[in-house]
Image 1: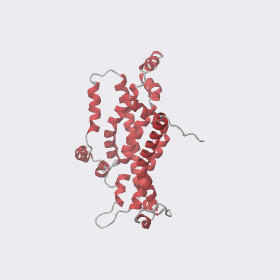
Image 2 (image 1 turned 180 degrees about the vertical axis):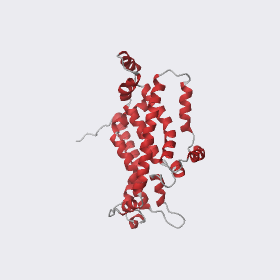
Image 3 (image 1 turned 120 degrees about the vertical axis):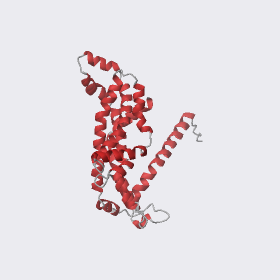
Image 4 (image 1 turned 45 degrees about the vertical axis):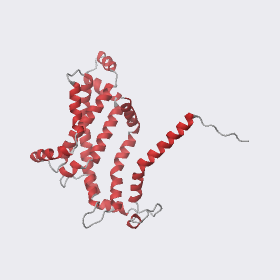
Length: 280
């Protein structure tokens, strides 16, 4: 006679935790999977009610997206995102190191002022920036968008990198200084490598913002610097045309793919960075 299997509280808790993880992952990934499937559906399959799960895949939506100037928008997004992130890190990381390692009077107020830029809705800055950039003559240029994205990304870069630098013990700096290392060498060869998970984290967060940002790209990009998020509106339809769901889905998948691939490439450093943030 088979004896009933007894589950202790630890096993029950582990099963419930696993079930909860599966449910959360399903909720998070379901919209992405739905859009991915829609991008391979023909217009007839897209309009069926109820929606079909089994269908004959087609690349017609991606073909239309390619002919609608996707590479033009992709080039603009790549230029703006990569340049703004690189310049934000070039300025923000040394600034965060200085705030972490040097005794500065009123540093709490400085950090609060730095972060206050992220407290406000971005729409508040739209009109002043538009007039300011009009005076400079950089409306509708890559440089104008890069300028705006640097302003918005710098606070989060400085704030997060300072916390990562604070987690690196100062006796490492002191030991290197006793060996004759300059302050720059301490930063570049000793402290920064220890904070690589943080660097990966702020890079991905800044890249996601610059890649996905829509408001400033819509207002300030003009015709020659429009990014992928602005190009997405080509398929939303209007008073006389319907939403082109297939092309909209294909464009959306093409937009999120580079960021997902980038996150996968630095997955290990990214996990360590988010873990450190959670512990802090």
